[in-house]
Length: 616
Image (cartoon, rainbow, N blue to C red; front, side):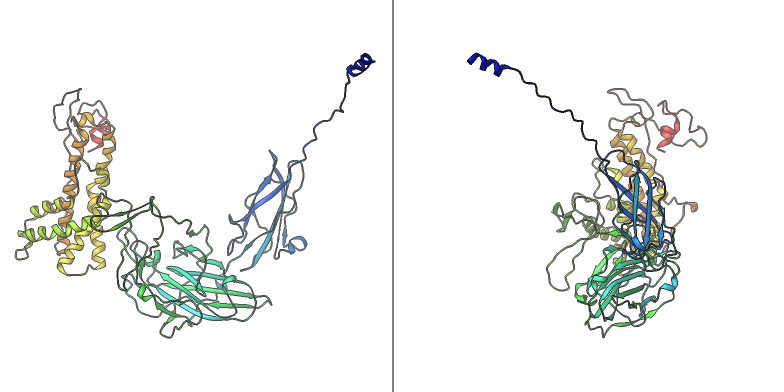
């Protein structure tokens, strides 16, 4: 019985499961995303008559392609399905960028909604995308009801002026559906509405060729309005329009007077529209910003702040009037590219204190931006912020200025004798002493002469200019200052200082080792560079003093070399290990006796233009 039971249990049992194949994957759905009009997502205030539409495809599968698309446009979001003003129908194309709108003419200030759907490689159509929109700006000069306004006071346009503030008030008498502000200016502007900043752009309206193209910006200000009395205000600054520009720092390149053009369109839920625009009823005043310049910085006097100046209820009884100016509006265009915005806040990585007592904030990187600094002190205390890309071992420029204040008095007293005619002054001695003054902080062995660039020289020369004028107890006239800056830069160019330093890179690589024939060719080259820079600074400093004191500066054609082209002597022989080559001058200029492609006489085996001719 037991045996039978065991046999029964031992019978093998074969279980056969039904064969199944893996389920075929369903086609991955494709959908259009990231809809853009003229490169932007839901842009406001464009002025392209046939905006270009673009999108991207989103799918989970691989190898998904678009074989066709359909775009539809309507004036309302609800009208996309029922009453579009433009429908492409199915278009067999894989194009997904720059599909030009081809419907009826577009109207100023009108918003348009659009959608797209696509067909994939299997012929499967996607769902319609989420609606996107674009909004037109002011397309015609006649759309501008606003007038150009400027403060009705006289200005000295030859110098930076305080930043003007412009303001007005208006009533909002209903529920607001939408509000748009269209703004531009001659100069830079910032606008506030009920005490809040409008937009996040900086340096608006941007830099263009203002005579032919001037950008305006469009802002959605719906959330900044409230029922009852409202106020709007604008600040203007010189910017590129009339600020200091070009090498000789000229002003007023595009015009002499700042102006604001602002048009606010309010649409109420009951269909009414209200226009608030810049006109003769606005008022003007100055505030705490006493000067603002792209290159020369800003002067801010906190004692002159006007709290709540852009809010309703502010007392502007002592403000001045504005006047209208005639300036074309047919040059106004919508921005073509992205604006400048604040994108990041960074904190200093280190705080240093110089021997002169200055505090240095090391931001850890080169950047473009503003400093936010919180200070405490009594009214009238001056806080000076200076910006620089490079620090020396003692700090910033105060060390140079401090040294000059100590030494220049001695130099000028010793060599500039007002009791003698200038022709009898000791000009050679003056040149030599001034060169020592300017080169006081240079160590031939430690200095990287790549850093002795034209900007360093310009900085030191302008310090000399200021010092001499201070001694004369005279103000520097802007025009004379520009001429002096131009004089300094022209002298640097004449010297070809940068061409000389260009050879330093090659010298570091040992290319000119045989030409120098020295144990330390780099040091020899630095000594030559030092002599050359000394010659340059002494010559320019003499020219600067002559100019300030009213003497004519002789030109090279009159027998005086304005800046001597210093040419060091090079050893011509080859250098063997452990030996010093016999030194003899190598010809750096042969005046036609040798061509630039001929072998160099120094014996290097190279062409003249690749050897001594390269550094001459």
